[in-house]
Structure formats: structure tokens, C-alpha cells
Amino acid sequence: MNIIRSARVFWSSAVIAKKALFAWLSPGLWLMQMFTMSLFQMAFFVYISMYVGNPQASVAYVAVGNAIQSIAYVAIFAVTNVTTEEKEAGTLPGILVTPANRFSLFVGRAMFQVVNSMATVAIGLFYAAAVFGVDFSRADFLTLGVVVLVTAFATVGFGLMLSSLGFYLRTSMVVANIFLFLGLLFCGVNFPVSMLPEYLQPVSYIFPITYATDAARMAVDGASLADVSGLLGSELIVMTAAILIGYLMMLMFEHLSRRKGTLEMF
Image (cartoon, rainbow, N blue to C red):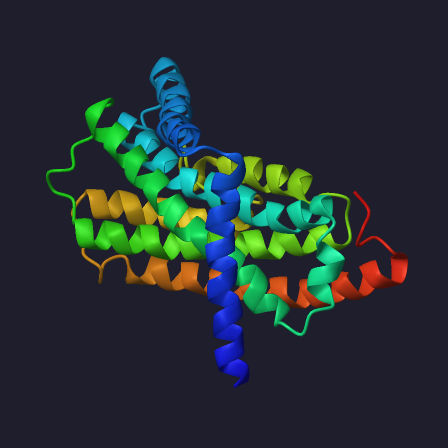
């Protein structure tokens, strides 16, 4: 019965998340955001790379990297903002006194962003081919699709971990911003991780996007699912760790927020 109840909470939360998005954002504006965000970010970094003439960062390298990075923008921002939105609306204390499984509720709220982020990266890859001339003729699209799916779940897991800070802090969005910009620096999106100082390179591997960008570029070059299985396995490990840490952080910060009286602080 507990499993069925948790599944119902999960599904209801996912449906509510979709309805909540379109309650304040019209479908037209949502589509405009989807179609412009990937293009502007990709163009910015592609043209910078072309200007500096970095031989290790071709147009294809940067375009594919930024298409994958767009998953993080959508998933981490949206998921991290869940607790902040509930706090702003004054509904967070009410949610926490219900008998519903908290983790199922917040994971359900996050699941719509898996679909949202996959759509965003598909648009980004379209721009990579149509605008910047990236050659997808050798691409293994099954492998690329699996990479995108795993990455969407992995970044949502990271977002859930950061979202738990919203129980205690006034807002967790500042932390989300920091993580996103760290991702641009450390994840090999615009230049290889090997270009970083050696003492900083290990930091790259705590981010799921590091594995995703490498796997996606390999898939575009024709690599099979078996070829990228090691990278995907590492990404799944990072995702699992992020979700487990996020769950423990959620319990800890809920306890601290009750003790400090910060649940309604906004």
C-alpha cells in the first residue's frame, strides 16, 4: 500500500508541475524560451572558440557540448526552484505536515523537467546541424538518445540535491547558479578537461555533464552504446550519489528548518 500511495503522490506531483508551469507561462512563451536559449548560448561559445582559434575546440566540439549543457540549465534551475516556489507561495509547511512521502512528492515535481530538458537538448542538436554545420551523418542516434535520457535524469538528481537547501535557506537559486557556472568551467563543455590545471581536473568528475559531453561527442562520431557504456556507468553512479545525498540533505535541512523556524522565511 505504501508503494501504491507513493506512486500516486509521484504521478500527481508530476501532473501538478506541468500545470503549474503553464499557469504562469503561456505555451508560446515557453516555446520561445526553448528555441532561443540553446541557440544564443551555443552561438556565444562557438563564435568565441572560432575567434580564439583553439585547435582542441572545433565548432562541432563546442556546439555539441553546449547542446548537452542546456539539459543542466533546464533541469537544475527548474528542480532547484521547487522548494523556493513552495516557500514563496506559503505552501511548504502544509506539504511537510501531510502523510505523503516527501521524496516521492519532490521527485514527481522534478520528472516533468526530464521531458522538458530532453526537448531542449533536441533543439540544441538541431541548431548544431542546421546553423553551425555539425555533421551527424555518422551519428549513432540510439546511443545519443540514451546519453540524453541518462543525462536528463542525472541532472534532475543534482537539482533535487540542491533543492533540499531551500528548506533551510531563503532561496537555493544562488547555489544553482554557482553550480551551473562551475559546470561551464569544469565539465569540458567548451574545451577539454585536460586543459585545466591538473589539481583542478578531479573536480570535473563530480558533475554528470562531464561524462555526458564526452559520450555525446562519441555518439555523434558513430560510437555504439557499448563504446560509451563506461561513461554512462560513471554518470549513473554520480546520479545515484546525488539522489541519495539529496534525500539525506532533505531530511537534515527539514529538521534544521523546523528547529530554526526557516520554513516560512522568504
